Image (tube, rainbow, N blue to C red; front, side, top):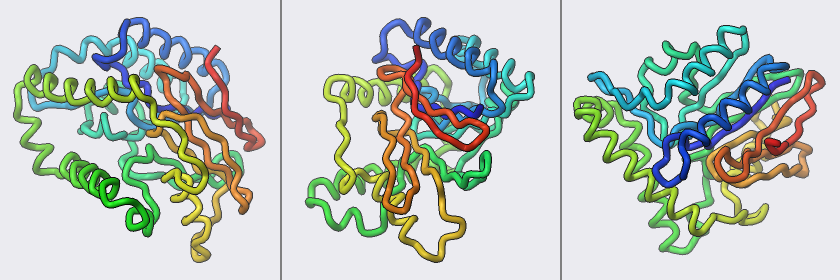
Length: 264
């Protein structure tokens, strides 16, 4: 079995009972390990993760989940970690401590005979999408895209790594907390097939006739909504939900059949 999950936002200052939250995710991963050949973590597993030049004592709070991930990879389970927009900043430490495979870009691959495109999902919008939106919405999206480029910029990353971890973490976790509190207060609903950015992105890729191969599945995190939508091309778009409110994930069996499930 192959498992896909995303958006745990571990360590969030807006999610109560952080230790219980982490232990619940560990329990789920250990349950998956009974039959897993691979586990794909599609971003924002941490609410804020940054690797500084200096020792960061606060990382000890993540010792249980890091130990769990190390156990999984030591068992021969391939664990793939996609950077999200909250845990971009891993520069080798996370891979060394856990044995995970780190992905910084979307992945096109074949699993159980099925062609799969997967990514966290932030920054993926169809080419003509922004121009069709109201001016104020366009402005917010452009601000996000500028911020995203800044976060991914090697120079800004290098300078932030020079900060004392206590200061860097305060800034990072507070920024993330405000984002999480806003969402918890007013969850962002599914916009519908003709307006949801990641669905439109998948449709544009499907309509690109030069694309080879055609995909059976598009799998994304980021949106914190559960969706399993079949397009007219027969491809399916799967949005994984999250691991702090909905506790939804996807699994693929050896025949390449995909199912979206809730943690029990």
